[in-house]
Amino acid sequence: MYTTRYVIGFILILTASVAVALTGLREVTKNKAAQNEDIFNKRAILSAIEDYLPDGKKVSGLSDEEVAQIFAQMQQPVLNMQGEVLDGVQAETVDMAQERKKPEAERRLPLYIYEHNGENFYILSVRGKGLWDEIWGNIALKSDANTIAGAAFDHKGETPGLGAEIKDNPAFAKEFEGTKIYEDGNYVSVKVRKGGAKNRTHEVDAISGATVTSDGVSEMLYRGIKYYQPYLEEIRQSEKAQGLLIQ
Amino acid sequence: MAETAVKEKEPLFQFGKKERHLITDPLNDNNPITVQVLGICSALAVTSLVYPSFVMAIAVIFVTAFSSLFTSMLRTYIPKQVRMIVQLVIIASLVTVVELTLKYLNYPIYKQLSVYIGLIITNCIVMGRLEAFAMANKPWRSFLDGIGNGLGYGAILIIVGIIREVFGKGSLFAGSPIELKIIGPTVDYFINTTDSALFGWYTNNNLMVLPAAAMFIIGILIWIQRSYNTKLVDVS
Image (tube, rainbow over all chains, first blue to last red; front, side, top):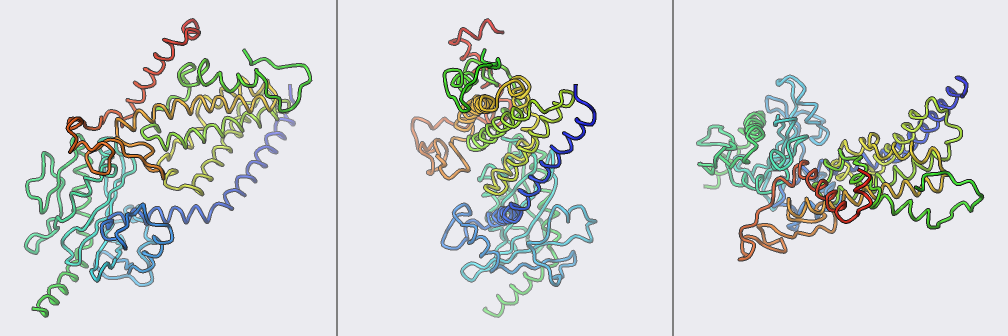
Protein backbone atom coordinates (compact mmCIF):
# COMPACT_ATOMS: atom_id res chain seq x y z
CA MET A 1 0.00 0.00 0.00
CA TYR A 2 1.04 3.56 -0.58
CA THR A 3 1.18 6.16 2.15
CA THR A 4 -1.35 8.97 2.14
CA ARG A 5 1.46 11.46 1.67
CA TYR A 6 2.62 9.65 -1.48
CA VAL A 7 -0.93 9.51 -2.87
CA ILE A 8 -1.51 13.22 -2.33
CA GLY A 9 1.90 14.11 -3.73
CA PHE A 10 1.38 11.93 -6.80
CA ILE A 11 -2.05 13.39 -7.56
CA LEU A 12 -0.81 16.96 -7.05
CA ILE A 13 2.15 16.53 -9.39
CA LEU A 14 0.03 14.77 -12.01
CA THR A 15 -2.80 17.30 -12.04
CA ALA A 16 -0.42 20.26 -11.92
CA SER A 17 1.58 19.05 -14.92
CA VAL A 18 -1.59 18.22 -16.88
CA ALA A 19 -3.04 21.63 -16.06
CA VAL A 20 0.09 23.42 -17.24
CA ALA A 21 0.21 21.42 -20.48
CA LEU A 22 -3.47 22.00 -21.29
CA THR A 23 -3.37 25.69 -20.46
CA GLY A 24 -0.37 26.03 -22.74
CA LEU A 25 -2.12 24.27 -25.58
CA ARG A 26 -5.23 26.38 -25.10
CA GLU A 27 -3.23 29.60 -25.16
CA VAL A 28 -1.53 28.54 -28.38
CA THR A 29 -4.77 27.59 -30.15
CA LYS A 30 -7.03 30.26 -28.65
CA ASN A 31 -6.78 32.94 -31.32
CA LYS A 32 -7.20 30.62 -34.29
CA ALA A 33 -10.12 28.86 -32.58
CA ALA A 34 -11.92 32.15 -31.92
CA GLN A 35 -11.30 33.18 -35.52
CA ASN A 36 -12.69 29.85 -36.77
CA GLU A 37 -15.82 30.30 -34.68
CA ASP A 38 -16.25 33.81 -36.02
CA ILE A 39 -15.98 32.65 -39.66
CA PHE A 40 -18.33 29.75 -38.93
CA ASN A 41 -21.00 32.16 -37.67
CA LYS A 42 -20.46 34.52 -40.57
CA ARG A 43 -20.90 31.69 -43.08
CA ALA A 44 -24.22 30.89 -41.41
CA ILE A 45 -25.35 34.48 -41.98
CA LEU A 46 -24.15 34.46 -45.59
CA SER A 47 -26.10 31.30 -46.38
CA ALA A 48 -29.26 33.45 -46.25
CA ILE A 49 -28.03 35.26 -49.38
CA GLU A 50 -26.42 32.24 -51.00
CA ASP A 51 -27.88 33.11 -54.44
CA TYR A 52 -26.45 36.62 -54.42
CA LEU A 53 -22.83 36.08 -53.42
CA PRO A 54 -20.07 37.64 -55.53
CA ASP A 55 -19.17 35.70 -58.71
CA GLY A 56 -22.12 33.34 -58.20
CA LYS A 57 -20.22 31.36 -55.59
CA LYS A 58 -21.76 29.16 -52.91
CA VAL A 59 -21.03 29.71 -49.22
CA SER A 60 -18.98 26.50 -49.10
CA GLY A 61 -16.95 27.77 -52.07
CA LEU A 62 -15.85 30.94 -50.30
CA SER A 63 -12.49 30.99 -48.58
CA ASP A 64 -12.22 32.31 -45.02
CA GLU A 65 -10.61 35.49 -46.34
CA GLU A 66 -13.45 36.11 -48.78
CA VAL A 67 -16.02 35.67 -45.99
CA ALA A 68 -14.17 38.19 -43.82
CA GLN A 69 -13.90 40.55 -46.77
CA ILE A 70 -17.64 40.43 -47.51
CA PHE A 71 -18.36 41.28 -43.90
CA ALA A 72 -15.85 44.11 -43.91
CA GLN A 73 -17.69 45.66 -46.86
CA MET A 74 -21.16 45.32 -45.33
CA GLN A 75 -22.84 48.02 -43.33
CA GLN A 76 -23.53 46.55 -39.93
CA PRO A 77 -25.86 48.77 -37.90
CA VAL A 78 -27.23 47.61 -34.56
CA LEU A 79 -30.77 48.74 -33.78
CA ASN A 80 -32.62 49.15 -30.54
CA MET A 81 -36.26 48.17 -30.22
CA GLN A 82 -37.36 51.63 -31.41
CA GLY A 83 -35.56 51.13 -34.70
CA GLU A 84 -32.81 53.65 -33.93
CA VAL A 85 -29.27 52.87 -34.96
CA LEU A 86 -26.97 52.54 -31.96
CA ASP A 87 -23.61 54.27 -32.18
CA GLY A 88 -20.29 52.48 -32.09
CA VAL A 89 -21.51 48.88 -32.27
CA GLN A 90 -20.99 46.47 -35.14
CA ALA A 91 -23.70 43.91 -35.83
CA GLU A 92 -21.20 41.05 -35.79
CA THR A 93 -20.38 41.73 -32.15
CA VAL A 94 -23.99 41.15 -31.05
CA ASP A 95 -24.61 37.70 -29.60
CA MET A 96 -28.21 36.74 -30.32
CA ALA A 97 -28.27 34.09 -27.60
CA GLN A 98 -27.40 36.74 -25.01
CA GLU A 99 -29.91 39.21 -26.43
CA ARG A 100 -32.71 36.68 -26.13
CA LYS A 101 -32.14 36.46 -22.37
CA LYS A 102 -32.75 40.21 -21.93
CA PRO A 103 -36.19 41.72 -21.42
CA GLU A 104 -37.79 42.45 -24.80
CA ALA A 105 -37.53 46.22 -24.59
CA GLU A 106 -33.75 46.14 -24.02
CA ARG A 107 -32.76 43.82 -26.83
CA ARG A 108 -30.39 44.92 -29.54
CA LEU A 109 -30.99 43.87 -33.12
CA PRO A 110 -28.10 43.19 -35.49
CA LEU A 111 -28.69 44.10 -39.12
CA TYR A 112 -26.42 43.37 -42.06
CA ILE A 113 -26.83 45.42 -45.20
CA TYR A 114 -25.29 43.60 -48.13
CA GLU A 115 -24.93 45.16 -51.54
CA HIS A 116 -25.02 43.11 -54.70
CA ASN A 117 -25.16 44.64 -58.19
CA GLY A 118 -26.45 47.90 -56.77
CA GLU A 119 -29.26 46.29 -54.84
CA ASN A 120 -29.41 46.27 -51.04
CA PHE A 121 -30.17 43.15 -49.06
CA TYR A 122 -31.17 43.40 -45.41
CA ILE A 123 -30.23 40.38 -43.35
CA LEU A 124 -32.20 40.07 -40.13
CA SER A 125 -31.37 37.70 -37.29
CA VAL A 126 -34.20 35.91 -35.51
CA ARG A 127 -34.17 33.49 -32.63
CA GLY A 128 -36.88 31.41 -31.00
CA LYS A 129 -37.80 28.09 -29.52
CA GLY A 130 -38.18 24.74 -31.25
CA LEU A 131 -39.23 21.48 -29.70
CA TRP A 132 -36.19 20.68 -27.56
CA ASP A 133 -34.10 23.80 -27.54
CA GLU A 134 -33.40 27.08 -29.28
CA ILE A 135 -33.73 27.57 -33.01
CA TRP A 136 -32.46 30.56 -34.93
CA GLY A 137 -32.20 31.88 -38.41
CA ASN A 138 -31.10 34.66 -40.70
CA ILE A 139 -33.61 36.16 -43.10
CA ALA A 140 -32.51 38.23 -46.08
CA LEU A 141 -34.96 40.82 -47.39
CA LYS A 142 -34.66 42.45 -50.80
CA SER A 143 -34.34 46.21 -51.13
CA ASP A 144 -38.14 46.67 -50.93
CA ALA A 145 -37.87 45.42 -47.31
CA ASN A 146 -40.76 43.10 -48.09
CA THR A 147 -39.71 40.20 -50.31
CA ILE A 148 -37.61 37.47 -48.72
CA ALA A 149 -34.51 36.81 -50.81
CA GLY A 150 -33.36 33.84 -48.79
CA ALA A 151 -33.37 32.25 -45.38
CA ALA A 152 -31.14 29.96 -43.38
CA PHE A 153 -32.02 28.18 -40.16
CA ASP A 154 -30.12 26.35 -37.50
CA HIS A 155 -30.96 24.67 -34.22
CA LYS A 156 -29.36 23.42 -31.06
CA GLY A 157 -31.04 20.08 -30.56
CA GLU A 158 -34.00 19.33 -32.81
CA THR A 159 -34.69 15.69 -33.74
CA PRO A 160 -32.60 14.50 -36.71
CA GLY A 161 -34.81 13.67 -39.69
CA LEU A 162 -37.72 15.68 -38.25
CA GLY A 163 -37.18 19.09 -36.68
CA ALA A 164 -33.53 19.16 -37.75
CA GLU A 165 -34.72 19.26 -41.36
CA ILE A 166 -35.09 23.04 -41.00
CA LYS A 167 -31.31 23.04 -41.37
CA ASP A 168 -30.50 19.74 -43.08
CA ASN A 169 -33.08 19.95 -45.86
CA PRO A 170 -32.14 22.86 -48.15
CA ALA A 171 -35.61 22.66 -49.75
CA PHE A 172 -37.20 24.03 -46.57
CA ALA A 173 -35.25 27.28 -46.52
CA LYS A 174 -35.60 27.51 -50.30
CA GLU A 175 -39.39 27.71 -49.95
CA PHE A 176 -39.09 31.09 -48.26
CA GLU A 177 -37.55 32.72 -51.33
CA GLY A 178 -40.02 35.10 -52.90
CA THR A 179 -42.47 35.12 -50.01
CA LYS A 180 -43.49 38.53 -48.67
CA ILE A 181 -43.84 39.77 -45.12
CA TYR A 182 -46.31 42.60 -45.85
CA GLU A 183 -49.82 42.40 -47.25
CA ASP A 184 -51.16 45.75 -48.47
CA GLY A 185 -48.80 47.57 -46.15
CA ASN A 186 -49.77 45.49 -43.09
CA TYR A 187 -47.28 43.23 -41.40
CA VAL A 188 -48.32 39.57 -41.64
CA SER A 189 -44.96 37.72 -41.66
CA VAL A 190 -44.57 34.26 -43.23
CA LYS A 191 -46.25 31.21 -41.74
CA VAL A 192 -45.11 27.61 -41.84
CA ARG A 193 -48.35 25.83 -42.58
CA LYS A 194 -49.15 22.26 -41.62
CA GLY A 195 -50.81 20.30 -44.40
CA GLY A 196 -49.32 22.38 -47.20
CA ALA A 197 -49.16 26.07 -47.97
CA LYS A 198 -52.34 27.57 -49.45
CA ASN A 199 -51.15 31.10 -50.05
CA ARG A 200 -47.62 30.98 -51.44
CA THR A 201 -46.99 34.67 -50.77
CA HIS A 202 -47.19 34.31 -47.01
CA GLU A 203 -47.02 30.59 -46.34
CA VAL A 204 -44.59 27.71 -46.78
CA ASP A 205 -45.06 23.97 -46.28
CA ALA A 206 -44.39 22.62 -42.82
CA ILE A 207 -42.13 19.64 -42.22
CA SER A 208 -44.25 16.55 -41.72
CA GLY A 209 -43.72 15.01 -38.31
CA ALA A 210 -42.21 18.18 -36.89
CA THR A 211 -45.23 20.26 -35.94
CA VAL A 212 -43.72 21.86 -32.87
CA THR A 213 -40.55 22.91 -34.68
CA SER A 214 -42.58 24.22 -37.62
CA ASP A 215 -44.80 26.25 -35.31
CA GLY A 216 -41.66 27.44 -33.57
CA VAL A 217 -40.30 28.73 -36.88
CA SER A 218 -43.59 30.54 -37.57
CA GLU A 219 -43.59 32.14 -34.15
CA MET A 220 -39.90 33.04 -34.35
CA LEU A 221 -40.37 34.71 -37.74
CA TYR A 222 -43.47 36.62 -36.72
CA ARG A 223 -41.94 37.97 -33.51
CA GLY A 224 -38.36 38.27 -34.74
CA ILE A 225 -39.13 40.23 -37.90
CA LYS A 226 -41.63 42.37 -36.01
CA TYR A 227 -38.78 43.67 -33.83
CA TYR A 228 -37.28 45.22 -36.95
CA GLN A 229 -40.58 46.86 -37.93
CA PRO A 230 -39.76 50.50 -37.10
CA TYR A 231 -36.58 50.33 -39.17
CA LEU A 232 -38.16 48.41 -42.04
CA GLU A 233 -40.98 50.96 -42.21
CA GLU A 234 -38.41 53.71 -42.69
CA ILE A 235 -36.80 51.83 -45.56
CA ARG A 236 -40.19 51.18 -47.13
CA GLN A 237 -41.11 54.86 -46.89
CA SER A 238 -37.87 56.00 -48.50
CA GLU A 239 -38.20 53.31 -51.21
CA LYS A 240 -41.70 54.55 -51.92
CA ALA A 241 -40.52 58.17 -52.09
CA GLN A 242 -37.78 57.16 -54.50
CA GLY A 243 -40.23 55.22 -56.61
CA LEU A 244 -42.47 58.30 -56.85
CA LEU A 245 -39.54 60.45 -57.88
CA ILE A 246 -38.64 58.10 -60.70
CA GLN A 247 -42.23 58.02 -61.92
CA MET B 1 -5.05 -14.47 -24.49
CA ALA B 2 -2.32 -11.94 -25.05
CA GLU B 3 -3.17 -10.14 -21.87
CA THR B 4 -0.46 -11.68 -19.70
CA ALA B 5 2.69 -9.79 -18.84
CA VAL B 6 5.83 -11.08 -20.48
CA LYS B 7 8.82 -11.64 -18.24
CA GLU B 8 11.86 -12.23 -20.49
CA LYS B 9 14.03 -9.41 -21.86
CA GLU B 10 12.86 -8.13 -25.21
CA PRO B 11 13.56 -5.15 -27.49
CA LEU B 12 11.57 -2.02 -26.73
CA PHE B 13 9.61 -1.78 -29.98
CA GLN B 14 9.31 -5.42 -30.94
CA PHE B 15 6.60 -6.20 -33.46
CA GLY B 16 6.01 -9.94 -33.59
CA LYS B 17 3.03 -12.22 -33.77
CA LYS B 18 1.74 -11.27 -30.33
CA GLU B 19 1.94 -7.59 -31.10
CA ARG B 20 0.16 -8.10 -34.38
CA HIS B 21 -2.64 -9.82 -32.53
CA LEU B 22 -2.98 -6.82 -30.23
CA ILE B 23 -4.03 -4.86 -33.30
CA THR B 24 -6.03 -7.50 -35.19
CA ASP B 25 -7.93 -9.09 -32.30
CA PRO B 26 -10.09 -6.05 -31.54
CA LEU B 27 -10.99 -5.77 -35.22
CA ASN B 28 -12.84 -9.06 -35.20
CA ASP B 29 -12.62 -11.65 -32.39
CA ASN B 30 -12.64 -9.11 -29.60
CA ASN B 31 -14.30 -6.09 -31.18
CA PRO B 32 -15.17 -3.49 -28.53
CA ILE B 33 -18.58 -2.75 -30.07
CA THR B 34 -19.88 -5.99 -31.56
CA VAL B 35 -18.34 -8.43 -29.06
CA GLN B 36 -17.81 -6.51 -25.84
CA VAL B 37 -20.73 -4.16 -26.58
CA LEU B 38 -18.93 -1.11 -25.21
CA GLY B 39 -19.03 2.47 -26.48
CA ILE B 40 -22.52 2.05 -27.91
CA CYS B 41 -23.74 5.52 -26.92
CA SER B 42 -21.44 7.46 -29.22
CA ALA B 43 -21.74 4.78 -31.91
CA LEU B 44 -25.47 5.47 -32.06
CA ALA B 45 -25.13 9.23 -31.88
CA VAL B 46 -22.41 10.29 -34.30
CA THR B 47 -22.82 7.78 -37.15
CA SER B 48 -25.54 9.47 -39.22
CA LEU B 49 -22.80 10.75 -41.55
CA VAL B 50 -19.50 9.11 -42.49
CA TYR B 51 -17.26 12.13 -42.11
CA PRO B 52 -18.07 12.85 -38.44
CA SER B 53 -17.82 9.10 -37.73
CA PHE B 54 -14.38 9.12 -39.28
CA VAL B 55 -13.24 12.10 -37.21
CA MET B 56 -14.71 10.50 -34.11
CA ALA B 57 -12.85 7.26 -34.89
CA ILE B 58 -9.55 9.12 -35.22
CA ALA B 59 -10.22 10.94 -31.94
CA VAL B 60 -10.95 7.69 -30.09
CA ILE B 61 -7.91 5.94 -31.57
CA PHE B 62 -5.76 8.84 -30.37
CA VAL B 63 -7.25 8.77 -26.88
CA THR B 64 -7.12 4.98 -26.40
CA ALA B 65 -3.58 4.74 -27.76
CA PHE B 66 -2.05 7.54 -25.74
CA SER B 67 -3.99 6.99 -22.52
CA SER B 68 -2.83 3.35 -22.63
CA LEU B 69 0.71 4.49 -23.27
CA PHE B 70 0.79 7.03 -20.43
CA THR B 71 -1.03 4.80 -17.98
CA SER B 72 1.35 1.97 -18.73
CA MET B 73 4.36 4.23 -18.30
CA LEU B 74 3.05 5.36 -14.92
CA ARG B 75 1.65 2.00 -13.86
CA THR B 76 4.28 1.21 -11.24
CA TYR B 77 3.94 4.65 -9.67
CA ILE B 78 0.14 4.91 -9.66
CA PRO B 79 -1.18 4.35 -6.11
CA LYS B 80 -3.69 1.50 -6.33
CA GLN B 81 -6.23 3.29 -4.12
CA VAL B 82 -6.69 6.14 -6.59
CA ARG B 83 -5.87 4.43 -9.88
CA MET B 84 -9.31 5.11 -11.40
CA ILE B 85 -8.99 8.83 -10.72
CA VAL B 86 -5.51 8.89 -12.19
CA GLN B 87 -6.73 7.10 -15.33
CA LEU B 88 -9.58 9.56 -15.59
CA VAL B 89 -7.21 12.53 -15.35
CA ILE B 90 -5.13 11.09 -18.18
CA ILE B 91 -8.17 10.35 -20.36
CA ALA B 92 -9.81 13.69 -19.69
CA SER B 93 -6.70 15.67 -20.54
CA LEU B 94 -6.22 13.76 -23.80
CA VAL B 95 -9.85 14.39 -24.71
CA THR B 96 -9.30 18.09 -24.02
CA VAL B 97 -6.31 17.97 -26.35
CA VAL B 98 -8.57 16.46 -29.04
CA GLU B 99 -11.21 19.13 -28.43
CA LEU B 100 -8.76 22.03 -28.65
CA THR B 101 -7.12 20.56 -31.76
CA LEU B 102 -10.45 20.15 -33.52
CA LYS B 103 -11.45 23.70 -32.68
CA TYR B 104 -8.16 24.81 -34.14
CA LEU B 105 -8.18 22.68 -37.28
CA ASN B 106 -11.81 22.17 -38.27
CA TYR B 107 -14.42 24.17 -36.41
CA PRO B 108 -17.51 22.97 -38.35
CA ILE B 109 -16.82 19.33 -37.53
CA TYR B 110 -16.23 20.30 -33.90
CA LYS B 111 -19.68 21.90 -33.90
CA GLN B 112 -21.20 18.82 -35.48
CA LEU B 113 -19.71 16.36 -33.00
CA SER B 114 -20.47 18.79 -30.16
CA VAL B 115 -20.78 16.99 -26.83
CA TYR B 116 -19.72 13.59 -28.14
CA ILE B 117 -16.07 14.61 -28.22
CA GLY B 118 -16.29 15.41 -24.51
CA LEU B 119 -18.13 12.15 -23.93
CA ILE B 120 -15.12 10.11 -25.11
CA ILE B 121 -14.10 10.49 -21.46
CA THR B 122 -16.99 8.25 -20.46
CA ASN B 123 -16.47 5.81 -23.32
CA CYS B 124 -16.11 2.44 -21.59
CA ILE B 125 -13.65 1.19 -24.20
CA VAL B 126 -10.98 3.62 -23.05
CA MET B 127 -11.10 2.97 -19.34
CA GLY B 128 -11.80 -0.72 -19.91
CA ARG B 129 -8.52 -1.12 -21.79
CA LEU B 130 -6.60 0.85 -19.17
CA GLU B 131 -7.89 -1.36 -16.37
CA ALA B 132 -7.66 -4.63 -18.26
CA PHE B 133 -4.43 -4.15 -20.20
CA ALA B 134 -2.38 -1.01 -19.67
CA MET B 135 -2.14 -1.39 -15.88
CA ALA B 136 -0.45 -4.79 -16.34
CA ASN B 137 1.60 -4.42 -19.52
CA LYS B 138 4.58 -2.55 -20.89
CA PRO B 139 4.10 0.81 -22.65
CA TRP B 140 4.73 -0.32 -26.23
CA ARG B 141 2.27 -3.19 -26.09
CA SER B 142 -0.29 -1.07 -24.28
CA PHE B 143 0.04 1.52 -27.00
CA LEU B 144 -0.61 -1.11 -29.69
CA ASP B 145 -3.53 -2.47 -27.71
CA GLY B 146 -4.98 1.04 -27.53
CA ILE B 147 -4.58 1.53 -31.27
CA GLY B 148 -6.17 -1.87 -31.94
CA ASN B 149 -9.20 -1.18 -29.81
CA GLY B 150 -9.60 2.28 -31.25
CA LEU B 151 -9.45 0.78 -34.74
CA GLY B 152 -12.01 -1.87 -33.85
CA TYR B 153 -14.34 0.83 -32.59
CA GLY B 154 -13.66 3.08 -35.57
CA ALA B 155 -14.22 0.33 -38.13
CA ILE B 156 -17.73 -0.36 -36.83
CA LEU B 157 -18.43 3.38 -36.66
CA ILE B 158 -17.48 3.86 -40.31
CA ILE B 159 -19.43 0.79 -41.52
CA VAL B 160 -22.55 2.01 -39.70
CA GLY B 161 -21.91 5.55 -40.95
CA ILE B 162 -21.69 4.42 -44.59
CA ILE B 163 -24.95 2.45 -44.40
CA ARG B 164 -26.80 5.26 -42.61
CA GLU B 165 -25.57 8.04 -44.85
CA VAL B 166 -26.19 6.27 -48.17
CA PHE B 167 -29.73 5.22 -47.28
CA GLY B 168 -30.60 8.21 -45.11
CA LYS B 169 -29.13 11.06 -47.14
CA GLY B 170 -28.16 9.56 -50.48
CA SER B 171 -24.61 10.89 -50.13
CA LEU B 172 -21.20 9.85 -48.83
CA PHE B 173 -18.68 11.93 -46.87
CA ALA B 174 -21.06 14.92 -46.79
CA GLY B 175 -19.40 17.94 -45.24
CA SER B 176 -15.90 16.87 -46.22
CA PRO B 177 -13.95 18.08 -49.27
CA ILE B 178 -14.61 14.81 -51.14
CA GLU B 179 -18.40 14.76 -50.84
CA LEU B 180 -20.08 12.23 -53.16
CA LYS B 181 -23.74 12.60 -54.03
CA ILE B 182 -25.11 9.20 -54.89
CA ILE B 183 -28.88 9.15 -55.07
CA GLY B 184 -31.32 12.02 -54.72
CA PRO B 185 -33.95 14.17 -56.40
CA THR B 186 -31.74 16.80 -58.08
CA VAL B 187 -29.28 16.86 -60.98
CA ASP B 188 -26.32 17.08 -58.61
CA TYR B 189 -26.75 13.44 -57.69
CA PHE B 190 -25.21 10.48 -59.51
CA ILE B 191 -28.62 8.76 -59.72
CA ASN B 192 -31.26 11.42 -60.21
CA THR B 193 -34.54 10.03 -58.90
CA THR B 194 -36.74 12.61 -60.62
CA ASP B 195 -35.59 11.57 -64.11
CA SER B 196 -34.55 7.97 -63.59
CA ALA B 197 -37.01 5.36 -64.84
CA LEU B 198 -35.49 2.74 -62.57
CA PHE B 199 -35.26 4.66 -59.30
CA GLY B 200 -38.24 7.01 -59.55
CA TRP B 201 -39.79 5.33 -56.52
CA TYR B 202 -36.79 5.92 -54.29
CA THR B 203 -36.86 8.30 -51.35
CA ASN B 204 -34.38 8.58 -48.54
CA ASN B 205 -35.15 6.48 -45.49
CA ASN B 206 -35.75 8.88 -42.64
CA LEU B 207 -35.33 6.16 -40.04
CA MET B 208 -31.66 5.94 -41.02
CA VAL B 209 -31.07 9.48 -39.80
CA LEU B 210 -32.34 8.61 -36.32
CA PRO B 211 -30.04 6.97 -33.74
CA ALA B 212 -32.41 4.00 -33.56
CA ALA B 213 -31.27 2.92 -37.03
CA ALA B 214 -27.71 2.57 -35.75
CA MET B 215 -28.92 0.14 -33.12
CA PHE B 216 -30.57 -2.06 -35.74
CA ILE B 217 -27.48 -1.93 -37.93
CA ILE B 218 -25.14 -2.80 -35.06
CA GLY B 219 -27.49 -5.66 -34.13
CA ILE B 220 -27.38 -6.97 -37.68
CA LEU B 221 -23.58 -6.61 -37.77
CA ILE B 222 -23.32 -8.67 -34.57
CA TRP B 223 -25.56 -11.31 -36.15
CA ILE B 224 -23.50 -11.45 -39.35
CA GLN B 225 -20.22 -11.57 -37.43
CA ARG B 226 -21.40 -14.44 -35.24
CA SER B 227 -22.76 -16.44 -38.10
CA TYR B 228 -19.34 -16.80 -39.70
CA ASN B 229 -17.08 -16.46 -36.66
CA THR B 230 -17.92 -19.60 -34.67
CA LYS B 231 -15.39 -18.73 -31.96
CA LEU B 232 -17.74 -16.08 -30.68
CA VAL B 233 -20.77 -18.26 -30.28
CA ASP B 234 -19.35 -20.16 -27.29
CA VAL B 235 -18.29 -16.97 -25.56
CA SER B 236 -21.78 -15.64 -25.14
